[in-house]
Image (cartoon, rainbow, N blue to C red):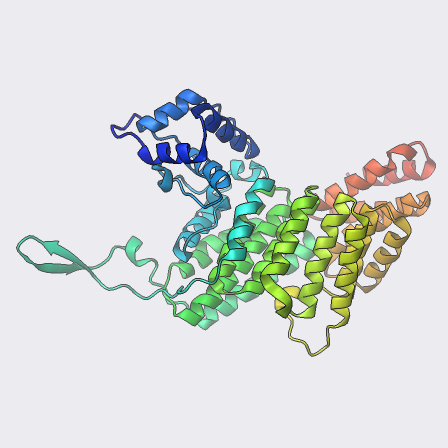
Amino acid sequence: MTERPAQRTPNRQLAALIAEAGFSNAGLARRVDQLGLEHGLDLRYDKTSVTRWLRGQQPRGTTPALIAEVFTRRLGRRLTAQDLGLDACAPVYAGLEFAATPEEAVDIVGGLWRKDSGSHAELRKIAFTPAGLVVPSRDWLIGRADDRVARAEPGPVRVPVQGRPAVPRQRTQAERGTGQRVSAGDIAALRSVGELFRALDNAYGGGHARQALVRYLEHELEPMLRGTYGEQAGRRLFAAAADLTRLAGWTSYDIAAHGLAQRYFVQALRLSQAAGDRAYGSYVLVTMSRQAVYLGHGREAVQLARVAQQGVGSSAPPVVQALLYAVEARGHGVLGEVRAATASLVRAERALETARPGDEVPYWARFFDDAQLADEFGHCHRDLQQFRAAAQHAERSLQLRAPGYARSRLFCRVVLASARLGLGELDQACQLGAEAATQAAEMRSVRAVEYVRDFERRLEPYRDAAPVRGYRDKVAALG
């Protein structure tokens, strides 16, 4: 890696933290290289590189944030590049930071939107890192809503002039922000945009309009966050920003940009804290848990679900409690933990049974109904190879699920196909699999394609059977 010319001042901040962490120069370099590999970066630093940093050289690109993350993990407290005496980098990596203030959160997520909107391919190649889940979820759990989020129109800056009273001058545009006054109508529009993109995602997949969503965040939402608003409007604005950022992460997850999705989820979690919306923060953690399940990180999925449960407490509506328990069950299912998965499913079922028609349910949790619970049961039983129960629940979910949830119906159909296959019903399994493959071909969803491929891997032991050959012919005809 090319470094900037050496500075004259040794970096005593970095030296002190190296001593506190107990790193050798070679050990620090090795950890930075390993973390870089997690994010698709081939850095190849060594002990000589660290010696140069200690002498005052500044590493380029995302490396300062990577070094800061190494120390954050080691010391158990959040550290930034500036804390290490290093220059901050453009927030490509920095999306995993849990910002100290709402202003910093806006800077980080705004940088993420701009990078993503610019179609930077490297951003979508960044790898998912399970270790990157620990600090944000912990900081959210022990944190509290920010004391103040309001932004007033700042007055002039008073510039001292030698021998005379300070002379006022107008602030620059960067100092003022956009100056846009955020109205109730602006915030209502953000909610409507969220519903629109959510419907598109459910019906056609995350890749259908993801880029349009990200551009909207950059060009419409960021100016609002940098505008002026009172305390109540500010909380509602940050709540809408959290929701749209989570949705950007969800659509990124659906196209398999997993490292990028992880960063969006972390930032949505931080924005929910600025909003003072603890329940929505638990929903973001649920989303992170689902991604961990999909990627096979069952232990992390369970931990995230439990942090969400602990963070929201027993005061959450029954539907929200059911959602949190069901997602924990999915993590146990991936790990093959039958008793724990069953216990979580039972808790989810009981919680949903206590819900009443007149209960106030957050808008983001209204999707969790009997159809969704049956879907969660079906997935868990499939993962635990309890195929008869998986088939029963998957069939029930398909009967109850509204047509608008096309991708969810596709996933459930594949679960049913896999269950039928596990029961030895090859003809029916192949028919269901072919229906799912046809749907997947009409969507922009990598997850949909991967569900179908998983089913095809399960078909391999039967590849010479007539139903399987027929299945392959149908899929080949899809082009």
